[in-house]
Length: 459
Ligand code: UD1
Ligand code: CA
Image 1: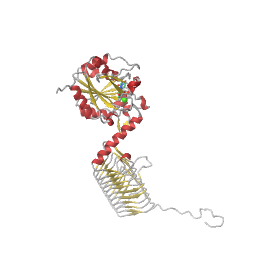
Image 2: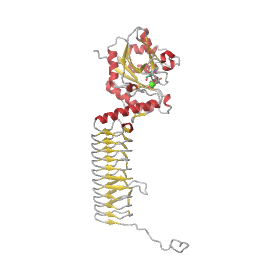
Image 3: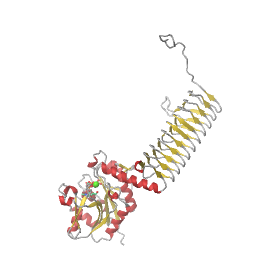
Image 4: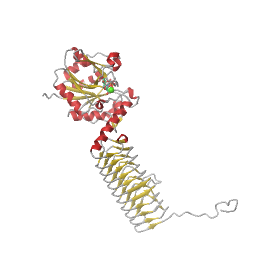
């Protein structure tokens, strides 16, 4: 087999008018990542040759999601897919023998399919290969017109199709592989369509008219060809990815009680015998260990969770939970929370940028921020680290081992509480407390006879 050099080209210059959005279509998030990153990942898997991405609408914004390897060409006016591809000729002409082209709004295409069409074109004497599928759902796909001898003769866009052509069920997936010399020559002489756009798809008719063979690959899994032209399509793609991801984790030994309502982003990792309950969102680089129970109604992002943890009705961001930690209901762990083995955060606990030692218990309505808490310390209900000083700076609180923070203690930072110290209920602690000491106050002041007597003379 020949090893002609292959260059991938991704079309992504369109505004995506049908999205009705200020944001370029390819930046819309799909399963947590901008749509364009799916095409970039595919390109990376298919060849070492960096892709050429055609940008136009809001190019500077789109460029931010590209790494340095990617080569960008700008299509300053969106004059159609043929015109878009032609912008890549300045970089690729004479550089690569084969040009593989697809649109960034087809994020579910598989590497296997791209490999197949490249192989097909490598073995084709003609100048191009296309991918088709069977679908009676129009969705803006071009229709494949075949000649009497069943040869692919033309692709007709839905908007330009006759009544008869609209009933054709063979559609153009929008993935092409071209012999590059032929391609660049033909693109330069491409005629505009009735709407004034230069259609890439018209190259099929050019090739047919030159009696050249068009390679055809057929897709059987229509999930792969969910193209995104509007937000209904976006939701369909999201659904399809979710189903795939959830099936994958169930096969790996994770129980999802209700997979239709469990949202696991592609980069998340889950351990065996973990149970994920409904309406749980696991996003970013979250990793959950074995035998955990997560959810219901929980959102966890960019967090590492050990084995045997329980998290219910809670929100956790950028934190670390060691083994046997339990959180919730209604806990909120904000960025930088580190909960050591056996920590318990009960209802309405909030932790931020703090390290909690082993077996710390914080049962109810407390806030710990910018603090270090020693092992086995108990944080009583309603206690708070007052970390934001009147100087508008954040200050740290350091609490030792086996400390008992009484209910409703206000710990005014910067502050140190020594090991085995205790604070009384309602105390406002503004000065360091040495180890093995008790801190109490501020007691309520009683102001005698300050309340007026009622009619019957009683107080
Ligand atoms: C296109 C095909 C259609 C195919 C479908 C598959 C054409 C004329 N039609 O239609 O046959 O069934 O894809 O998904 O090619 N783009 C540019 N510059 C432009 C116009 C478009 O870069 O001037 C990019 C868009 O950003 C998009 C891609 O090309 O990523 C496809 O454009 P879109 O308008 O979505 O084409 P479809 O109507 O889907
Ligand atoms: Ca499209």
